[in-house]
Length: 243
Image 1: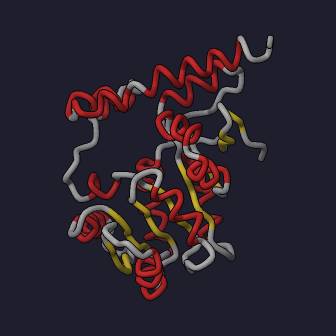
Image 2: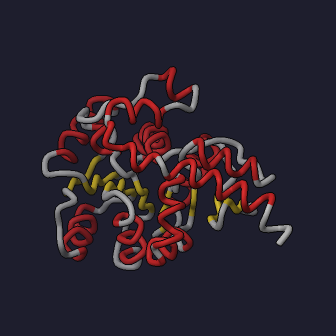
């Protein structure tokens, strides 16, 4: 299926259900594929961080996380079906991993968080095989790679935050024996119950970013990336073509 380019990043134009289908197919195929979910902040960072840009471009599956990407796609005349965030994808994958007997590894976050996340996930999906966990406080990638490979995981949720998780997945895809690596940002904190997700009303209104800002005011400077991103989309549509 052709990808949809939005400000230099080529996204899959799929619904959440279609993304689950595609990722499950990759999870049962040969080799290791990695999934990234760039939001406007990551897209803006790619402009300045060439290493991150290469990691995003090298991903096997790229999904639009954030209403800002959906808005930019519409402004550019190449609309995307819907926002598909990393946490939404991970949550939707869990029952399918359980049903298919695929093994999961949780990598990232502070010490103890991945274990708590595994405990909470297991409570909801008791037949799901979580083969191991490892916190994100490692200096040598080989240490984490060895832990994942020893656990025999099929799918790894990689919650190292950007740009580290994207670069980690690209750098280590050849060494890792798992079939799917999914970048999850701070998702393990949510699974562990440390960070609360926005109420459904905010999510349905595409205002999850606003809820995060209310709960974490320190995010304000990061949120300024969104209007910059939208202005870049407007410029790309109406000015660059005329130049």
